[in-house]
Image (cartoon, rainbow, N blue to C red; front, top):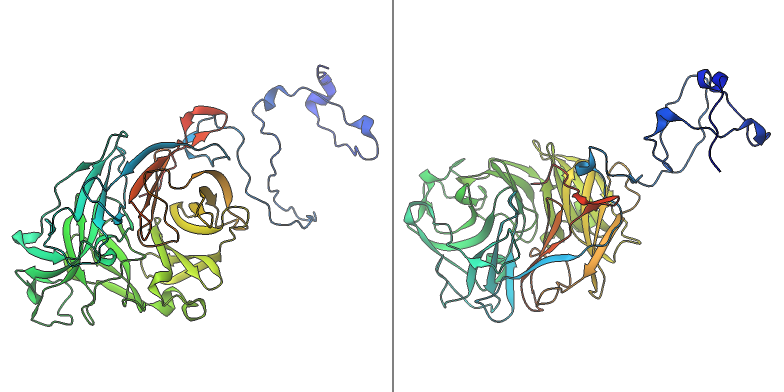
Length: 445
């Protein structure tokens, strides 16, 4: 039945009605000025003086039902079917169980990925690993063509070094970055790095020299070498992120003692560090001195975000990006989302993509979590794990990567103890009411 137009009197005055007592006072009408109304949404009402608001439970995230309007590229996604768009096996020249990493997808949808033979044997030198075919750097994207082996970045001043290309800590340390990159642990650097070359010195070697370093190789920034100033140990290979002119990472080796920053590019000791108790105040109770509990790190404009496998469950910590002081933390509840939380991707201070999986591995689950309304992780969709030639990782490690770029999720997982190293492109993530529009939030590295 067609809705009736309102009377002239009703057009100039909107009357209240108690429909529960007298339903005849509620008359349906046609509202020409409300064409763009959005149904079935709950909106907050500011409390006016003298008006008592009813107490309610925290609301679940309200998901926009329409995406055809102009801010669609920054809209929150709804649940939808996700598909595997591309699959790359980055072990074309390396046969056997492999490790690997990747940390960035460019605005042109290209990336670097590494692969290394997981034999546990010694190998080197950089960049031509011996024995041959134990470590490679590949170019990937923008399409789904096979990865292409590319030339590694040279060290400063024509230096050479050894690296254990067949061992995980030296050749597979996935993190997040704002440029295509890879990270290695180098030894037997020749010529030696002198104390005069190291910024923020004199550090532990004083005026001496050093022959080993953590090395970051970036497409734009080049080769950076860095150490900790107190004992010369290399920064940890978990919980690191590179953004702008800084690298953020924990220090202390297997037992984390501090969180610190290093200039990038640079040959440097840390330029700032903060004790772990100031970064993660409950680190003792939560067992977070153990570096293997540090799953991932990411940044937003003002904060560093840490994803941890704590004693109480999966936790997210928000850290001031300048002082590295603790700001807040949340305990994630994966109930109804996945058995485990694998990775995250921070889009902004109130929107974070979450990657989860089932145990035993069956599906990769993709969702999002809102810190201002943290009750649950909203499930977007899932794909079958192990969609490439190899199998999926069986627990969160420092070899798993998770990146969102221009409407697609990129998942890099290593064949640690299982098989091959792969990169998978999943999506696109689209507006439900208009699948021709891809959701492309700004903010990711």
